[in-house]
Image 1: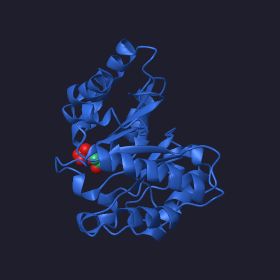
Image 2: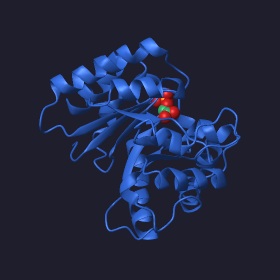
Image 3: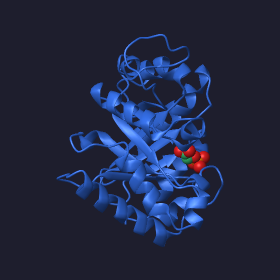
Length: 253
Ligand code: PGA
């Protein structure tokens, strides 16, 4: 059963215009209205860069937290057309950034770039939602755990503040496909990630692990039994307030 603090993170990807804040208004009011004490959860939404400034102001003292979807791997200001540094994100008052999403990896981000991003985001005191996940080939070859281990060790370091790092396990084959892992494999992978990260990076606590990939209001119930999971990274279903609210409702039903 659901216990402990859970995160429901919405990743809007390339979606949203200024008036889409209405979606967040509805999610925020529902969050405030329906929050029952025993349901301990946080809602974080990651709109595109174009909306970050406006939304960070609108939702400043609200329950909903705003996250950036990515950041550049160089900090402060510089000659990097079209890019946004972790410093610039921090200066908006934003506290979260997604790093290492498979869609960003697919457009050229490698482990070295991701490593720089994580380092600079932490330097700017941002909380990181760090995405890892195997592709379908890795899965078929039974290389999932090897891939995850490599994605973690190439990027993270022992001296990092892991209280500011949330790991999102997102199998690439599951993103936007409607396919989700079996409960058994997710139980196994979540337990592996918790144990591995704690040991490898010498943590005194277990790391937070989210699951992402085709989470929707229908299948959310099937994740309830995976008590180790600390929440969800939700793409497609986070663009509609109704779908997103139903996910949370159905999770706690
Ligand atoms: P999806 O995306 O929920 O649309 O599969 C998840 C993600 O990419 O974070």
